[in-house]
Image 1: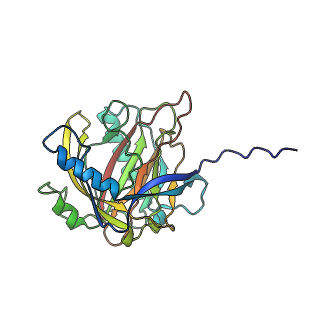
Image 2: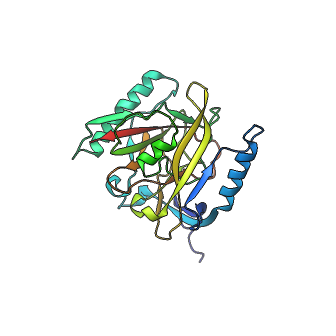
Image 3: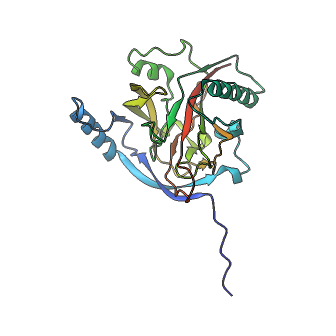
Length: 284
């Protein structure tokens, strides 16, 4: 008698992710080399970054099947929320902000934030936006030293003179007829990301804003060294009525979610990923 076929797993097993060599404490990305006055500077930076990386296989576990994934411990959670059907609708985006703020208040019910501030316009990814998913590029949007981050921005006005206590990432699929299959957002469990893993990641690149304007970005982010004790998680098949909330920065302790998109098969007839993302700053 033949053995029955095991049910398909939603865990992503043996996925190769690039990490920074332990010999490097700083890396830089100045944009993809293009025919411009910055070409040789960009090319040199890009080659140095590529030679600074080493690749390791990781298992990315489906958080929907895990009992020990809590926002308090891991830094990430999934909440149900009214869908955004049109990412160009200011009315829908404003309602989305209100819904998100209510969800965040529930996450911090024991100590609600006294102030919340959205950091930027919504960033659209996928479709014709010019912003593809950040695939196989594990990172934090902020180096875990706020004063160094602001100083590196070189004159960019911070949204507040006060260091936020927490900066959250807010991410959801948008304008899709199916859940996300092909480029899910994955996270390192914040409890397994340690200070000694952090790598200073200097970035200069361009983003396409919601109105189609292309704007330069200068940012001090973070990359990571590899450690076998790091745990990777994600939520499979995130639907239009679901929103991911995760941690970019924590003031009082080292707690944040390294994250990136990973490439997965797209089932026939399903939509390729389109998503909205933003950041929400909190003060307690």
